[in-house]
Amino acid sequence: MGTQFYIETDTDTPGDSYDQSAGGMAVLLTLMREFGMLTDAEPPHPVTLDEFGLSPADFDGPPRAGKVKPEKADAFAAAQQAAQDRFDYFDPATTGIPHYKAAYNEGRLIAPQEITAALAAYDSRPAEQRREADTALHGGWTRWIAFLRQAAGSRFGIRVF
Image (cartoon, rainbow, N blue to C red; front, side, top):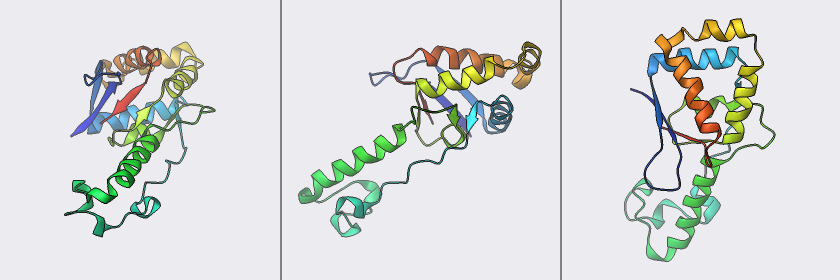
């Protein structure tokens, strides 16, 4: 099992992607940390049913199945939107990509601003250090940086699965 990074689009079709194995992700995250590309920001708290006046009794079956009783449909839709908003949240004052977004394949969005900040940290390092990293992951690091540069110019950023 690994992680897939997709450039988010405004269609149902994902944009270009970058895939990394589970073992490769450990190396990738280590290099990103060494280059100052990651932050230790905390994720937004998860959505809970009670925030929206919902309880397990409002569902026909397990809540994860999403079969909400008709009278609770609006509350459930609001809860789903809040969950998506929290997965897509970013801090405009960020100095990089939050570790939790890159490390876990939960469908979180890495915003273009986070990518740009991470690349600025990478680009500020000495050229020799960047050249040494190019050999990491059997060329995967070079492809990763190119992918980040492409995604930084995108409208939405990268979705992580």
